[in-house]
Amino acid sequence: MNAMCRTGQHILVIEDMPSMALYLKIALELEGYIVDLAECGKTAIEKVSQSTGPTRFDLIVTDLNLPDMEGVDLLSKLGAMEQCPPRIVLSADTGKETRKRVLAAGAAAYLEKPFDIRKVKQVIEKWCVAKHRLKIHKGGDLNPQYRQLKQNYLQYLETLAGQLENKLPFQKLKSLVHQIKGSASLYGLTGLAQQARALDQRLADHGAAASTSVRDALRRALISKGGVSND
Amino acid sequence: MRSLRKLLILDDDPHYSGMLALKLRQRFPELMISSCERTDISSGYDIYVLDNDFAGEKCGAALAEEVRGQQPNALVIVLSGTLELDLVKRLVNCHAAGVFDKSEASDLERMMTMIDYFLRQNTPEKQKADHASLRSTVTSISALLSEWNERLAFERR
Image (cartoon, rainbow over all chains, first blue to last red):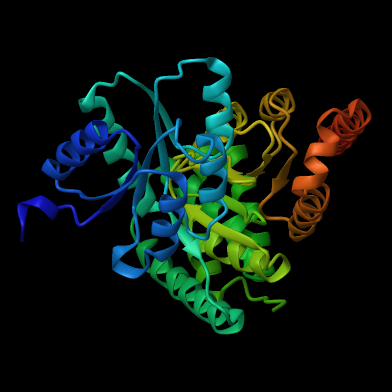
């Protein structure tokens, strides 16, 4: 693979000063990003709206002083677009009020100019990783998605029941019971949710001493799915 | 351009966040819903639904404070298995809108009602009009305090 695009991640740099735009483009390409440039807000909006599929931008780095629109307005407009990537602002404006407005308009980070390029790279890397941790829930027909989610959940409960044959650290058991208490209710498994609630209370009252009995009871409850479903 | 309303769920249980996202999409098709299994606060969302318990660590209040610092106008909701006084105090202080019990089906409905109210009250036009309205601020804070008091009184019984 070409070393110039080893991250496979696309960044749009919005900057009207050609020397600064070129500097950022070279510095980020050397880090393995694919960099596109826009010299004004209008071009940036066009490029973001046209970027789809594998060419979709993973991140936007923007200046605040643009020739055709206010940087804060541009942030809001970009944020209003579906699946807008994180936006990082680089600006010479060091005022607290501007920082507040920029963050309120949806910027992920605000870095002052003159900047330390190492810091800029760190922030970009952080947000590129964070973006990939985000799951966007979409898709037209919700019924098949509901069925799939429920099937996955029931399989998960079966796997958990199998894992509970072995001893579990107290904190992990506590956290698991707590988790089942919440999720079972949401999936309509009210019997299981009630049993998990009772087990949660037993752990709170008796602590680690109740671990074995709670683990066994939870395992039985998971196998029977609480015995009751109101779905 | 009409702005897209966005909601972010932070919860370390993907089964919970997946189903919650689906139920929210059923009720609010106009919302774009994202979720994250880690405690990374991304800015730019109108509504944040934050779990209090991340693998045994209680971080709902700290997350709510972080969101509030970044997004003063966002609706911040915390999900918790238990109502603890310290959590409630911190949430009131950072003007979080509510704390709901994940295991109570009725709480899910209450949360939906709160989101519905927020979306209807916070259209871009309304936000501008309400910004300087002392009356609306006082009303929402007193409603919030009354809600907390009712819930705490109930917990103590």
